[in-house]
Amino acid sequence: MRITVVGLGYVGSVASAAFSSLGHDVVGVDISYATVEAFRDGVLPIYEPGLNEVITESMQNGNLRFSQIENMDDSLGEIVVIATGTPTLSNGVSDLSQIKQSVAWSMELMPDEGIVLMKSTVPPGTGRMIKKELLQDTTLRYVANPEFLREGKAVHDWFHPERIVIGGQSDAISLVKSLYRGIDAPFVETDITSAEMIKYASNAFLATKISYINEIASLCDKIAADIDDVAAGIGLDSRIGSSFLNAGVGFGGSCLPKDLKAFRRFAEDNDQAAEIMSAVTLVNDRQRLLPYKFLVSTFGSISGLRVAVLGLAFKPDTDDIRDAPSIDLIRALLGDGALVNAYDPRALKNSRDILREGVRFQESLSDCFHDVQAILIMTEWPEIVDYDWKWIADQASSGCVLFDGRNALNPDDMISYGFKYKGVGRGVLSMDDSERNNYLT
Ligand code: UDX
Image 1 (cartoon, rainbow, N blue to C red):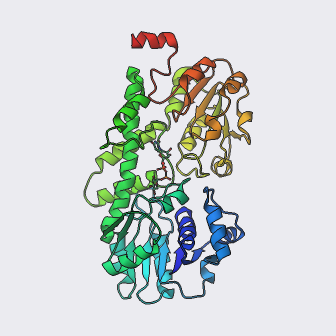
Image 2: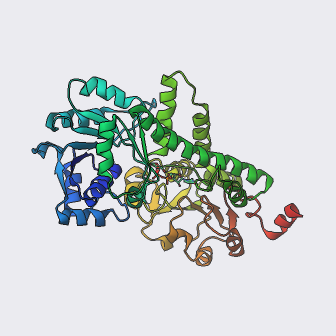
Image 3: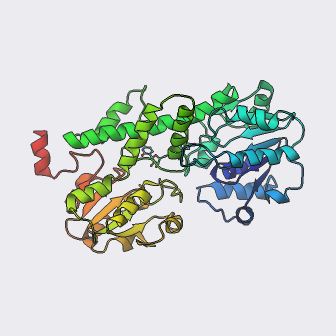
């Protein structure tokens, strides 16, 4: 089938690559000349493991090409996939202008009875509005087909999804199902608004799980219990499940925080207080500043304190720092006059663009530790977790504080190297032997 993908961000670039590798004839278009050139040259503007390989292969097979939107002179394929951004404005409203522009542009070039397939995350009710406001006098069909892929694992997730949700009229659903030929996953066929709701409710639930375990972790810290054991014990109940129960400095990224905010606003607009989601946000905002609060409670003033922040991306295997906990943390540290060394294997460039002044970005992990008084882990990159921590302890100031914001290190080892170790909800594990004995006996 001939497919045009509008918007070459994370979702659009992966959709272009994957649909073309399934044998469809795909053109990926974007408003930015620079983005299109980058894809043509094989120098992707984002870091996503495995994506470059799929794109290169599909381009060589002749199934995939890229075009700047205004230079797209051919008529479009029978399917136009919309994957443009839906940023959340400060009042929580989703800005749908890119979506509307993309649909309006597609309408001019699409064949009769073509399908507008919405992959961008939009508030429930958006599809209905687009049909009414834009598509009413056309023969075009509208399908909601939300995307659940995770950054860093996007290519894997595309080819091994846990479900494919398709909302629309049955004839259009059948056609869209055929796009996924070769992928083994259950289809959830529904109306447009329910499909949109599945996406919002999924992200809100994932965020809720994280804030839930973080709240339990805070209590574990208070009573010196061990969140790792508690999460394992909870997760074995199949009604709960073990994933997304990792306590830490909370969730970031381009989706969970943004969608939660938009969901709260969407609920308010429908005369409903989104109480759970407000609490989830509150807990998450608190989590990202835990390392800062720990330093203040340990040192009193942190002005002039030498601190290394390890991991800037919102999670490993991505260079994405959108809404990353590390950014809020570093701003708080700088605000109180701390001296910050920062390192990330992939996200240094993006971080430099945002945190312009005050941070000493280090090109190599080994350069971060000379005489530092505190080390804060914000992202559990394997390079950071698997480093020689005994060597790090030797470089750092004696009695250096180590705040493990992702509970990624072995506390006993760290204490034995001389660190003053603190995890999230690892109250008992953060103690030395004598303190621990007091609690456990
Ligand atoms: C998320 C959804 O998982 C995905 O289905 C949707 O399509 C887009 O949003 P993503 O933003 O890529 O994907 O990241 P995800 O892997 O979900 O992690 C989100 C954040 O939660 C990260 O900052 C991660 O560190 C944090 N997290 C995750 C936790 O703090 N604890 C956990 O147990 C899991």
